[in-house]
Length: 159
Image 1: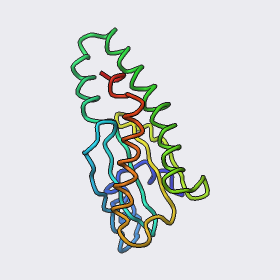
Image 2 (image 1 turned 180 degrees about the vertical axis):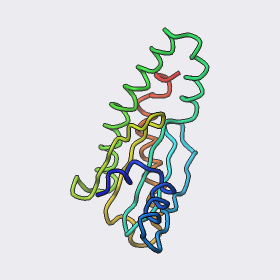
Image 3 (image 1 turned 120 degrees about the horizontal axis):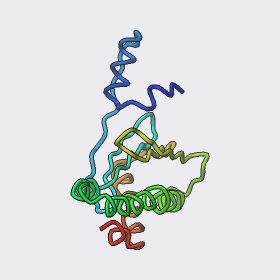
Image 4 (image 1 turned 90 degrees about the vertical axis):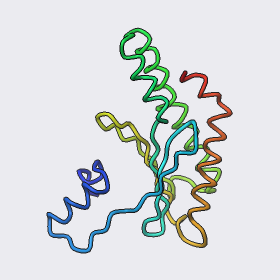
């Protein structure tokens, strides 16, 4: 795996590959999902796999900006967000993915991406993009994940 490419956006990776002489390089087309309060997501089907990217909801980013002039409150808020994103979200993503897809690490791979400003999660579900309506499968999984996170009352922790 090219780790440099793995840390780039789809468009950046495509351009880099083209510069290196690769031909017929098409970026993965992600579908944006902004329907949930516990995360923002995008998903795509690539080579028969479902791929998900998860991001903090916009409300979290907006709250952090508003708290910037109150350093003590901002630090407390950032600590809560970090605990949610690296602990609660990660654990819930693992449990829900294993349950929903009825699979383990041999078919499910997740990774935390600690980019400068954009902290995100990536999940590849190998082989689950085959068959009828993989988009429906992806949306149903996102709904289950959001319901599980809502049950933890994470929104009240972040505000």
